[in-house]
Length: 291
Image (cartoon, rainbow, N blue to C red; front, side):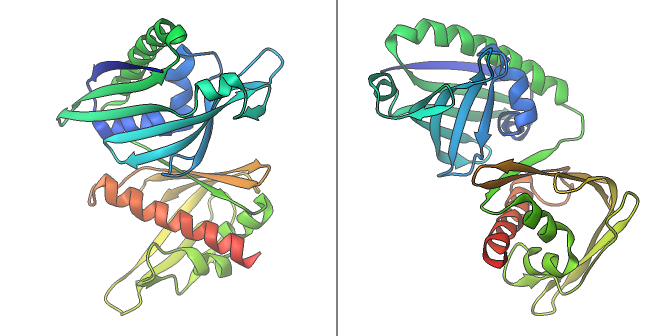
């Protein structure tokens, strides 16, 4: 293995660049530089399995079987490649697979100032493909910079993903039935959701009481539904005008829940990411234990 090191200054914050990496809708735009249809399957949580792939003319996927070795928002992502994907089949044992295992692909986001960042790539590659990867990555970084810079000044969206070992039908029930919502809709055990109501129709409202168990605080987390596709997608606007979208994507082992939300201006992006991710993780635990 040889390591290639490339860098690109991007006129955008680290937080915005991070979202362009982990949000699949954005990821697909700049990774066209590698292969048409480039995509990933899985989540970016540390320790998670993730597959990077592109389909061939027959729709079969080819790419890398990997793990998220490290995730330190918003400064560092490390991917450990552990095998290859050929014709939709994972291969960790062939000679070709072993040439890529383990290989690391690391992204470092250095803050230059509030609106400028340096993207630094360190990637282990097969020496025979070194020049090819350098050329692809140089094009990808140009695309990534253009994408991120086009998003500056627009409403930011945070994307979170959670794999859940349960059917989409049961996940939908947990997401929309007020009695189930009360069982998972809080980030920390020091809080709870003592009451919930839900009018599941476009224009209908949901109201979830969020309260500290010691009585020190509470608030009404509410919003209005914009669109509903049963067992697949919820679109809503929160009481303060921020959009939220939840997608339930069927997978062989259950489903992947993908959640996008516009952050508020009071708390840090890191704190908001942690809070929403904790609630999403609690949803997964609830679904796997109660259905």
